[in-house]
Amino acid sequence: MRIYSVCMLCSLIIISSTASDTGVQPIVALVGDDVILPCTLRHTVSAVHQSVEWQRPDLKPKEVHLYRDEKDDLVLQNPVFRGRTSLFKEELENGNTSLKLTRVKLSDAGNYTCYIPLLDHQKTIIQLLVGESTHLLTTQTPLGDRSHEIKGEFNVKSIA
Image (tube, rainbow, N blue to C red; front, side):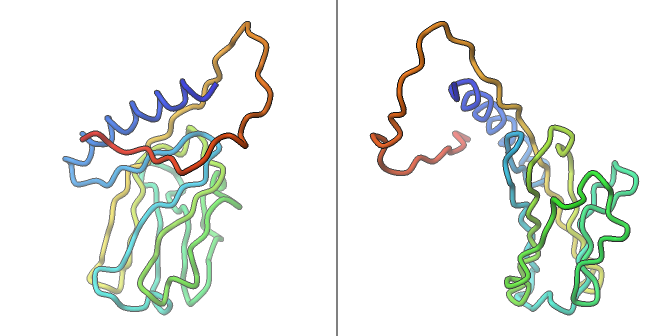
């Protein structure tokens, strides 16, 4: 059932390896996943007192998540992201301004900008690639739950 999903994910990883040649960081996710869009201040300084702006320039309004005056400011947030974005508040002290996007949708695919205006206008561009999880139909009788037989960890890695 997840074979096609893994194949789709592999295709997206191959696509993302070619996208990295453009200087844009590609991140791959499947519909329904939670994903972290990475952004860290160049100089290891606290981001607690900084403004952090996550945007999707192709959308109106373009604001995905805003952090100002030491708190989230979601008044201008695009409604499609409402209730699905957060920063790691405990990590702001370490300069980590990464964005967590939950319940990823196909429409979330695109370029995201992490912008820190007061630190030399630091800007990081992240490309989110979203794949759809498609289930294979089978005529066989489903097997019983054998998840207890699976041991170890599995990682998906880019071949590039």
